[in-house]
Length: 264
Image (cartoon, rainbow, N blue to C red; front, side, top):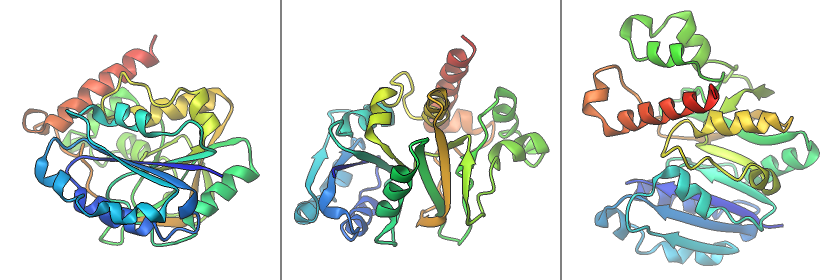
């Protein structure tokens, strides 16, 4: 069994090293082909990887890729997945996997039900709060309203953000889940040709999950399995963040692309 694991980094080298250390403790570590893509365009961040090769013997293979420029999350993820693998995982830099059997249990769930195309797990932030990573498909209205203070706690926004019972310890079917932790069979990834390269960073998750459902496959949220995370959302912010944050502006551009694609 071959397992392809992709980690795309942007300025979080210290967290990636901790992530890799914990990955090396997984029961299936020797089956993992791990690729880390450093998109940071930052020499200091890259130097943090100086001793990372010490983990090379922990995995089936290990590669550190450093593009000449930030090629975006989407392209970086697509080039880092080994299409000859049996299973693939997308893992964010800040994810901490304390349970050494977590990847094995995700694979077991995927293997037992061929109608499940993708799995994710419960995310607990550093304050002990469960993150809302399982959501309903976005609507243009909800995405606009969530950046307006008055509407932040209104039903239309709450329903979009809390589309599934993220606090549940059960196995739930979700419309889409954040790609901070994804597990899937690589044949499914290949059928969908990976993430859509028209998106630079955002909106890939609902787009991919929508295409997944087009194959009559399900997205499962495994509430009995957990990972830890720093809880920082790079797209957070209100209307004023459009003028202050490049990341939020990228989110808006990718959202426009998503809705143009959806309404074709």
